[in-house]
Structure formats: structure tokens, C-alpha cells
Amino acid sequence: YQNHSVWLKGYSAAGTAALCAAAADNNIDGIAIGGCIGLTKETLLARGTTGYNDIPNLHAWMDQDTIISLVSPRPCIIVAGLKDHIWPYKFAIKALKLPKIIYNLDKFESNLVLIKAKEGHTYYPNLMWPLINKYLYKKI
Image 1 (cartoon, rainbow, N blue to C red):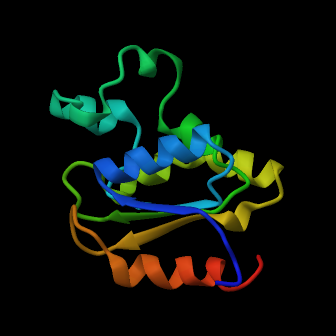
Image 2 (image 1 turned 90 degrees about the horizontal axis):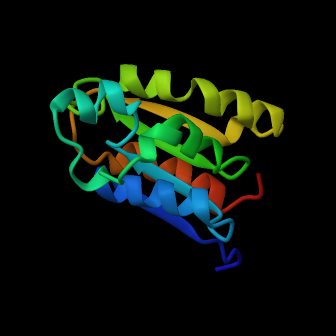
């Protein structure tokens, strides 16, 4: 490869892990995640369980909007399904309000991408990979 970028890709719990890793480690050049974005009160806590995402007291300090903001200015591609029963597209829109401000301040607003998928909680490689490839094979 001409480009030796380190990207993380994940869906559902693996998407959450990729997001948290990128927020904590600037050596990660970009992420592409799906089925994992929304504010906790409207998603996991509304279900009565947080499962894999249960980090004691994390939500007293931050939610996904803050965590996504920590990825800026690096690329953050998010796929959300309209019919996702856990992480629907409409909640991803809300979770991106703060990150959009941060990406704009960093002058990299085009690096924060939300892709709307038509179905539910599933992996959408046909939506995700073309955009990943654009970042990997050209300088943005």
C-alpha cells in the first residue's frame, strides 16, 4: 500500500470499541462504524440494559457526542439504519450535533459522515466500503 493508514471498522459493539479506541488514540487515522451511534438515554438506557457499553459512571461525564468529538479532525464514517431497533438513524442525527460543531471548528466538517441505511440493525458493507476506499486511496 502507498498509504499506511490505520483505520478501525466495526459494527454494533465492535463499532463502539472502534469509536472509543479512536477517541483515546491519535494513531488511529480514521474509523468507519455502524449500528452503534445515539445518545445513551434514547438508545441503550431506554432498553433497560447497556450490555457491552456499560462503563461505570461514564455517562455522568460524557456521552457519544463527546466521544465522537474527540475523533476530530480524523475521518469518522457512521452508518445508521432507519429501522434499527437499538441505534436508529434519527438518534444518530441527535448524537452528531456536538461533533458537527467540533469538526467545523477544526475545519474538517467533510470528515464527519453519516450515511442513512434503509433497514435495521445490520452491517452495510456496500454503503461503508466505497467511502472508506475514497479516504484510503486519495489524500483528503
